[in-house]
Amino acid sequence: MGQAGLEDYFRAQQVSMQWLPVLRALAQQLVTHSSAQDLRALFVKVGSQFASDVEDHFQEIQTLSQLEEALNGLWAQTNWGWVTLSEAGGGISIDHEAAPLAEAFGEECLEWSTGLLEGFYQSVFSVLGASDTMRVREASAPEGMAVHLRFGR
Amino acid sequence: MGQAGLEDYFRAQQVSMQWLPVLRALAQQLVTHSSAQDLRALFVKVGSQFASDVEDHFQEIQTLSQLEEALNGLWAQTNWGWVTLSEAGGGISIDHEAAPLAEAFGEECLEWSTGLLEGFYQSVFSVLGASDTMRVREASAPEGMAVHLRFGR
Amino acid sequence: MGQAGLEDYFRAQQVSMQWLPVLRALAQQLVTHSSAQDLRALFVKVGSQFASDVEDHFQEIQTLSQLEEALNGLWAQTNWGWVTLSEAGGGISIDHEAAPLAEAFGEECLEWSTGLLEGFYQSVFSVLGASDTMRVREASAPEGMAVHLRFGR
Amino acid sequence: MGQAGLEDYFRAQQVSMQWLPVLRALAQQLVTHSSAQDLRALFVKVGSQFASDVEDHFQEIQTLSQLEEALNGLWAQTNWGWVTLSEAGGGISIDHEAAPLAEAFGEECLEWSTGLLEGFYQSVFSVLGASDTMRVREASAPEGMAVHLRFGR
Figure 1: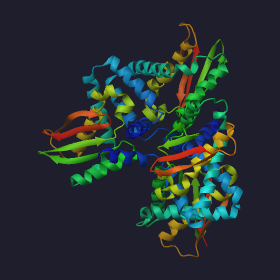
Figure 2: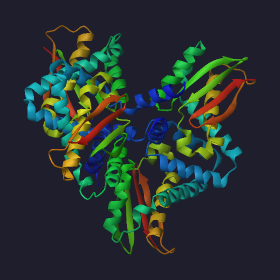
Figure 3: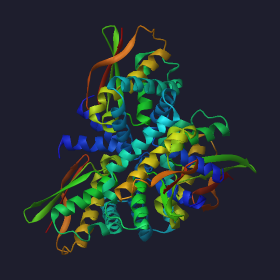
Figure 4: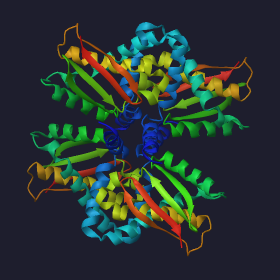
């Protein structure tokens, strides 16, 4: 009943009961019909669409810390955890913590479900004027609720 | 600010903010890639999968009113509205009220999103021993949050 | 299962299960120990305190419709329904719809629980520079989730 | 952004936004008017009332592990964390984890707000037939969301 118990408890609480069974069942059906690559491509588009629905939040942003603040306002409102942005070697590290993806679609679907955040952040940087040669990509495999992306060449 | 205002308010509150933008974006992407017929088939399978994840709730049921009660226990817990079952002409009318489908995926996607409830109820009746000649089908077009199905030949 | 059923359903869903039993039990205990008048006075202060915790939202407001919009932003975020403000005979009618007070503390406690909204709106008007001779008072008895107040002399 | 960040995030998410500002404001008002001792007594009664509203859950229980399971069913449904019961020196240790009391009423009110759990567990043991000489008391000061009680002589 130590730290691990607490994390398990909150993680299970994280996704609203209204959608957890549907999202899990949807993931299982999608996996039966499509490859992980196709599902990742679908989720990149879903994330991109999501970002374009909320792009008004990001129009007037000038600095990286303003962007982090605007993003975290949105993530806090929707219970999607929080993000840390940091400059790293000519690009930007995007570390998204407490993402509900692992809980919603299952740990084994993180391979493609994190595409949602990839597409989301890609769209946000495009709105801010980033050139097409700069892409958001996974920097390393997700660790549970922590998703690590990188924006750069 | 009368009854209509109240219904709009509760309807908008109905789907957790954590998933509303994702479900809406997902619906928009699915529509771009697949026909309504294919999406309905997918959602029938999702509903069927959902039902098989919770089929323990329905094992010991003997009567239609016990079934209605068990179903409404599940729907209340997950904020999915409630259902009324009634015998009608050798079949069973399934009237599901306050379903969050219209709000979650959009009114224009009810054409296929209600497949989720069709697949769910089909699976439940199968668990209860219904023969394969008996099917759940839409009885009439959904009216907002009210979905009308019929189980019968 | 018509309109009444829908309203009952949403009303029951309205207050988070985490606090409903505690708020109900608290109301029952408070009623045993204190008069309705004292409880109303307590809830006026609670509402006033609540308003002062969020008064930053109301600092730059110039018009009644800006105030209504700022208030409804707050009420929407916290699932406290919505308010309509309208000028009426040298004062302002404050009609608050879909308030969770009846569900949270019980219908029979509306006599004093609406003090929370009275204290809240009084504080908001004070922040906006209203003179002390102008008070928020109940305009008529609450009808279920609808609370009717009036700001004026 | 390590373990501490995660715990802070989940703790802040824990109490529904609908009631957090009201519960905080209520606690501040109660503290102004009453001693910690009186507030603890009030909250013991609130917890006791809460337990008697749900005592049906505990009627048929025979063993300590059945009791723990029934309690955790209730706590999971209401997002009130979870409890571990263990026999200890002729009494029972009651360790309640992830309680939303610290977040709801404020850390500084744990002195009296934990009375709610004391009254709750006291009532549950009474329903189960415990004699009046056996009481629930705080075993040690709460540590954040962890509340430590003991049932015994």
